[in-house]
Structures are given as C-alpha cells and as structure tokens.
Image (cartoon, rainbow, N blue to C red):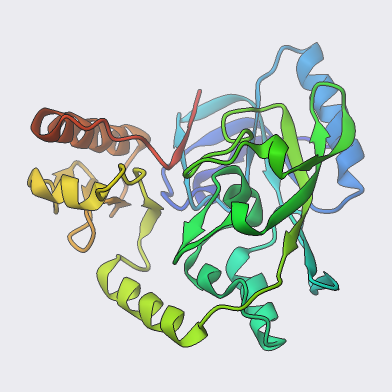
Length: 290
C-alpha cells in the first residue's frame, strides 16, 4: 500500500531503545488519517498480517528483532486546550504532562497529580494510570473510538471501560482504537504538595536513561520495587541490561541491550520474588511479541 513505510527502524519508538524493525509502518498524524487506517486494517486482514498500535513508547518492550506485520504509531494530538465548561477533550497521543501544564497555566489544578505521569492519554486510559492519588477512571467521561471489527466510529462511556487497578477493558483488547476522549476537570488539587512529591520521586528514580518506568505492577499492600530489592536484585546486571540502583522496579538498557536481556531480568525477578514471598509479579510494561 502507498501509505505504508517498509523495513522501519523501531529502536527509538520504545524508551527501552532495544534494536528492532517492522516490515510495515504507518503513522497516524491527523483525523484524516483515520480513513487511511481503515484501509490499512482491511489490507492487513486480506493479507493475513498482524498489526499493533504504539504511542509514546514509555511503557513498551519490543520482544523481537523483526516484526513481520504492520506497526501503527499513534501521533494524534492537539496544540491547544479544547475546553467546554468543565470538560477537556484530548486526542489519544496528547502528552499527559504537557496538557496538565497547559491547564495549570489557566489555574485549573484538577490534573495536577498527573505532572508525575509519563506518556500519552491513550496509554493512561488503557492502563487506568494512577499518580499521586488520581486515576484516569476518576476523570474519564467518554471516548471516541474506531471499532476495528466494523471500522465504524463509536462512543464509549465509563461503564464500558470496566476500570480496575492499572487495567481496563481496552488493555488487552485489540478491537478498539482510541481517537479522542472527554475528561472532567472540575475540582481542585493542592499543587504545592504534588510538586514536593514529584521532587522526592525524581530523587529516588533513575532519569535520562533507557527505561520504561515501572516494569511491574505493585502487588496489593506491597511494592514491586521493595520485593525485588528484598531478594538482592538491585544493581543486578545481565549482559547490557540492569536493574536500577535507585529503584528496583526500573529495568535499564545501559548500553546495547537486546530484548532478551530485558526479558531475562524480568524472569529472574519474577522467579526470585515468587520463591521468597509467594507473590507472582505482573508486568505493567506492555510486551509486544513477534
């Protein structure tokens, strides 16, 4: 198809920066590209090709060197705030922190906890992201999505989403592509307390390194980082990947790690924690397999 790039280097589309390629690639940049997306989905079905969607890449691990399908990058975003009364409309690739700062410029503090939330609204919605006491489910009203089965655009609401801790109906359901969403901005948050918490977080988490933030979800009543540290895996190095010395739930590509180096660290952490505490760690990072 004329819209598709071929043999696309994906290395910089995941903040793990493991080397990887895709046979086909398409980037959605505006609403007009939704019609092209429909054609691409039909093309994939006709040719029995698998397709995957990616966003900012802050919570993705490409578990392959070559993807024999179509990788679709979502870059739908807005430059300005789209406000109507107490409702904010965002596109799925809008960066959470940037929109939060735009709201703060207007003295709207409802989203202030999200100053510490990396990534896009798409992945925040899909994973029911949480930061400093605020979850996406607390502010979500509705979303406009493309049903990839029928190729029709539909509206979904909070009941449809089935929000759970770091989870939603969309997380492991490839049937829906989120175009935009409406969020409730009514209410206030204490900005000074949040800024102090963010400052402390920066002191205890690695920065300016190739990582995808928290690798595992926190178990109920515990912390994945604490559990991994308790089994003496802080600083653990396997080839060119390591577990951070600052926070044990951060895995880092510190030189030229491949995806297997990251997965081997994952397996080691899960094995040790389960053997010591009988707790099965669950990935928060989305792993895209070949």
